[in-house]
Length: 260
Length: 248
Image (cartoon, chains in turn green, cyan):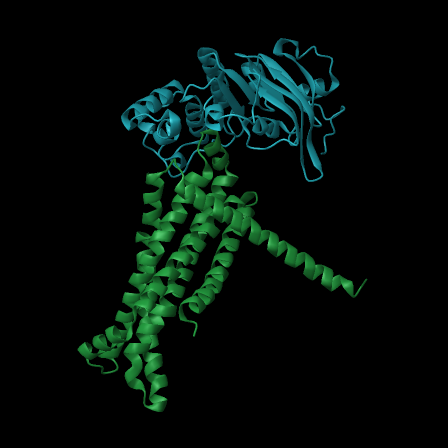
């Protein structure tokens, strides 16, 4: 019996994990179905666009520009070991567009948007505002979840695109100002090296990360426990889940787009 | 109008409702009393479909509350929540007119705003409150806004969940009087949950005492003091000794 105990614990954990995946999947499917079926709430959708898209621009921009600059410095320093300093524009471009742009924007959205959605909806649940919505003949999935998920699906790829451009610009500024690259040659190398596939993969990752970020925020908010502690747990859980799922999805999508 | 028969609901091993039977005739005001955690709010939420009962029957006008057009069913109800449950992100008038700004009862925004201001006046609030956010209002004003929202679409049935909790006695009296006036004026059927005896006497036509998941006593409010029911007597006189355990 003592020998079986760890196995039983492992089995329970696996079953709990599977059940959680099932619940989240059903919730996500329900959210997608509500996006497609009326009634629609355009005002809520535009508010979500503003909050997720427009108001995330400063943090996305700052993250991208510093990352692009740091990447240029690292590649230059690393490349100097084998006389490959000249590859800075190409590696900054490919690094930002394929990986760092989507992943960092996804993680910043998880930190900023997922937490905010989870805390807002969890507070609404604790203060009976979700029940109030139902009694006012308004489906919470349609009114709260669907607009946020759709807005994130549209906004996050745009944010990723903007982050990619700003990140490359950060590398360009460092390359031209600090590392002595010719401005026109830097841009030309960047443009020549990037492929359509790189850009498509970046935007596709953004769309998937947006779905994950918004869905996790809404799911944890709707399923929060009671009181301030419940809101806190929902917020923390949503960010953890979104961050891990974004990194896992990034691995899978990278395999899909770039497997040899 | 509303009939609950043998309604049971458990949360895990906690059996909250154990065969609840209750009848609320049309146009009357029923107040359900009972200690904290006895299932009063659960009973109310079962009628609205916010909680699904494990067994039993809930009929509204003879029709099963869980079947049929859900929007049409809910459109017949208004509800005042214990904490107001006002939407933080919306100004007061949009909270009051929420139902009139979307869905089957949708009206033009100007008309919905005019109705909201009229309802705010009805609950004793000035029109300049309309553009404030709920967080800018006192607890009593939030309750009034919640009441205005509950009556905005002129529902046939209004539920009040602990309408005076957290209010000072004067404001509690004002809210009680408002509820009574509005229910009489609208001819609505009302169900109120409270453990405030001043609310019971101000609002109720009939009273039901809920304990251990069942109705221990029900009857007209005038008969309440002479009921002879030990549970009801202990509750309305607030005694620590009696069949209801003080420590639960």
